[in-house]
Amino acid sequence: MPTTSTASPATRATPTARDTATDTIPTSAIATDAITANAISTGIVTATASPPEKIAYPVQLVQPDGRRVLDREHAALVADIGPTRLRQLYLDMVVARRIDTEATALQRQGQLGLWPPLLGQEASQIGSAHALHPDDYVFCSYREAGVAYCRGVDPAQITRLWRGVAHSCWDPAQINMTNPAIVVGSQGLHATGYAYAAHLDGAEIAVITYFGDGATSQGDIAEALGFASSWSAPVVFFCQNNHWAISEPVRVQSATPIARRAYGYGIPGIQVDGNDVLAVLAVARQAVARARAGGGPSFIEAITYRMGPHTTADDPTRYRSAAETELWQRRDPIDRIRRLLEREALWDSDFEQQVRERSDEVGARLRTATIDMPDPEPTELFEHVYATPHSLVERERREYTAYLEGVRP
Ligand SMILES: Cc1ncc(C[n+]2csc(CCOP(=O)(O)OP(=O)(O)O)c2C)c(N)n1
Ligand SMILES: [Mg+2]
Image (cartoon, rainbow, N blue to C red; front, top):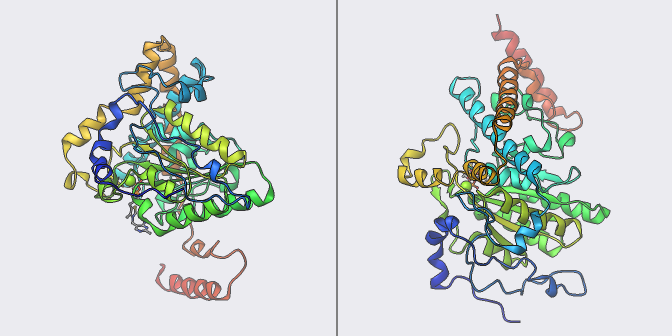
């Protein structure tokens, strides 16, 4: 089978079209199983699969006005999501936003050193997290507080790292989720290694790694995709294309839609409306099921938008227009599911009250715990550098202790 050429002039023009595609009813999506027929007898999947001729629109199940989209294939993947679970998705998204606004406020009040807001990305995070099983494993970037919440993290732990009082936020073993990875893309390699080991152990789990559009330009992600494909590692590559890598727009990261790049590695890729929680849940379930069943890696590009700054140290007004931000405010992922609930007569004042109480409770716990976090002893810096004692670290600890004794009153 001939390999398909990469960017044609037509596809080169797509980034701009892609930027505005999420209001449109999808007519088709990328086939997700195009490469399975190419698995050869060694079990290694060849990269000769042809990607679809064009990527039409991302998968969408709910339009911004709350109307359902007729897409039988993907709707079938969430057919079991009834009123209770729909409300749960809404509640979790509101709580994720509350965690974010509370932490952002705490940073502005001088209680945190830094915070990376997730505002606008709630559907991508909550939808994908709801597709996971407790024994699956998450390798995240720095922005996935919403995923951590769904994994069951204690809200009192979320800001530990960002206040600078600990090396980590939570215990990864308790929620099967790593701590924030600051080195962009590094978590893709960690996920692939973990997934491959699980595969060798015969563990029927999926591993998911979250990263951004900018991370797709990193060698680490390219290496992870190549290795995961060659060795059928059960990993879901979940790219939150939030349109920006700090001040770098997504259109300069890739000449083709990011999901299409997966095909170069022999990995099926799919684009999804990342502000549509049901669509994200559908495609994430498909990818997770594939990984758990031994079908190997998948790639999801969730098209969303970072409504806030990159971090609290950033001023996005210096590199993007108010008109662009306003456009995406009209596609707010929480408003969309609220409209769906209203249309389907699932919205009432009792539920509204329940949502308010839960988000107040989580917000208050996060705030009080942050302010009450004790400052660590300066020498705790030397803990957990190596798993076993190390002579260099011990020497540095002694030197630093002596220094502190000299300067402390
Ligand atoms: C290897 C590496 N290079 C550069 C940086 C600085 N940096 C931090 S975040 C970021 C942008 C990442 O953008 P993206 O992958 O789109 O994720 P987003 O922040 O939008 O979620 C950069 C360049 C870093 N932390 N690590
Ligand atoms: Mg980004």
